[in-house]
Length: 137
Image (cartoon, rainbow, N blue to C red; front, side, top):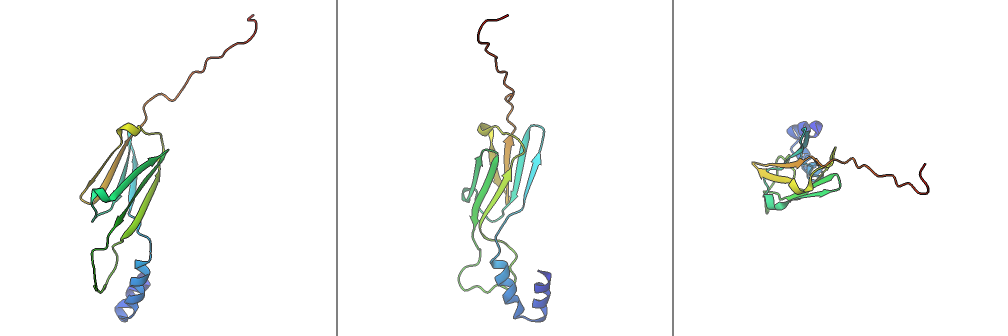
């Protein structure tokens, strides 16, 4: 990537290849997964969107965050530098533990999506009674 950038400084025609290369790559916003004693927090940096354009889905222990960030420039705009990703995206997070599906919350503020997933606190240990058949001794 640096090679393309520095080549563009020497030859203005080189930036065209750089723009095409960057525009064709998939937009994947950066994400952090933080584990606390009582919850998992997932942070996704996706500035320039509305909360209504972001989908958050929990399937088993997999959190899927997706949406579409629209390109800001419209019409016959000429790009001289392209570094901001746009288009469809999906971030998939494998959760390290079971979570309480009824208490999950998501908030989008200042370009940062924060999903709070409280740990499932119900005791997962089950005692199974043994039924004895036949005469007891």
